[in-house]
Image 1 (cartoon, rainbow, N blue to C red):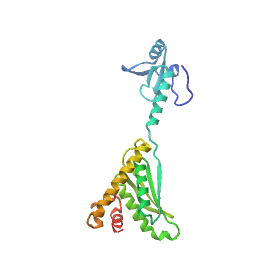
Image 2: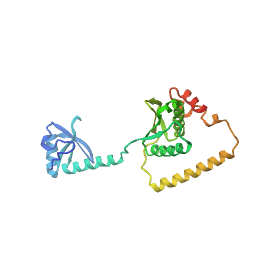
Image 3: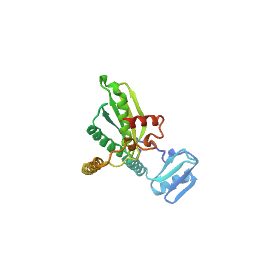
Image 4: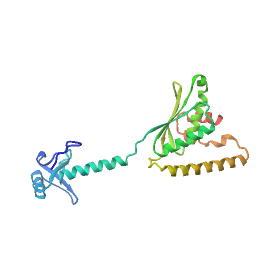
Length: 236
């Protein structure tokens, strides 16, 4: 038996001083006097390891202590590898961002949300451009609406100093990041679909812009003040 000073410490063998313990193993569990459990461990050439001291009676395993520590470290490593670290990705706009720049940033925001990251989009008002704060709010509302399939709004646009922020969190659980080649292929396919859509729109008869927005408010239906913000977006 080796005593590992790193990580959680477990009582082993004579360190376990309760009257009886519950022994768990592949064949189930059984309650027995601690002295009897110690004798069983010695006969098998292994250790009596207390794994749940707060249970009544405490739960123990009869196992080689070094092997037990190895299993614990391996399990912790596997859990850590399965966890996906969530980051907050920033998207910056100006109050008069053109469509090309807007679409470029929209594409990146979709990728961030698909990968399980949060998105903090903001409009930076430089100098006298603060006069266009309502225009910046409309831009962020449009951004949130275009990302409705990928993310949900955590908080509506709010002005903090010279910046107006919008926070989005992913709708789906994080996925493993795609290879660059796969992402390039998907980007080209998306661009082709977008070109086809624009071609259809150019050849289609004019319609009222208000039809482009969901009748029930869509993304903003369940948010306080959403109706008023949606109205602004429709009027833009």
